[in-house]
Image (cartoon, rainbow, N blue to C red):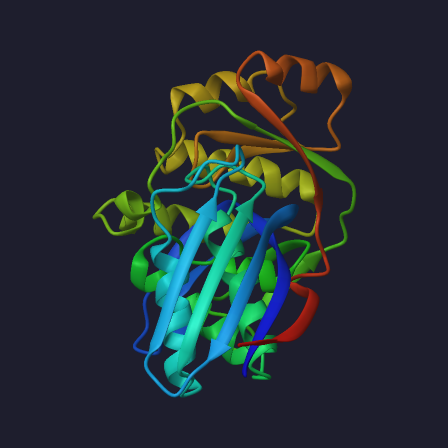
Length: 301
């Protein structure tokens, strides 16, 4: 009789407001610095693990916010393979991920799905969680799907990441900000890889360093700095620019990297105005981070 483990885990998403790229020989020190918000809801992963004395074989299926199968799950596949090798695990892993925000719109859904999957996988094989986080961070950088979303999710809340990498290698300052947020997708997806691997990233990073140096501890200045960053880095799109005209500069900005905007403590008239620009999503600032939701085992003939 073979033993099969089933586990379900959750991870918040992450909305970057400001980011600059950092490349180091040690990938755990690489990624991005900047400002961002961990968002709930994020992603839920259901995994089935069947240990075998053979090779490791993983299957990952990602379902988008509308319940449609996503085209790619490369970051999660890369991460689970890294983690399996690190733990010398052999067997079959089946992963199903449900996302609560659209992909390629700046909400860290690739990172959230990957973290949720790895949390469930780690608990299923009774392995430490922190190496799983490291594998998720390494995978998102290698696959070009993100730079600091894993770090932002692990920091939690509204964070100012003063250095790149993931804890304990990075340094983050937390802002004491609670409350609801509303996000709105106002245009077509933006592929993160197309931006973070190009020459324009040097200018983006230089602008990010300058605006981050001007931020205090007040969210008002963070959002104003984020708007300045979006405009001066030339990342802002026409869709985003038009939507931001409906919102106060001290509570809203563009979501990186997407054709999306986010507003803190939204008023009804602001939500109504945004609905004329695109699809609106309600969320909350998440301080709890990824977590295991349930786990169990059964015997398979």
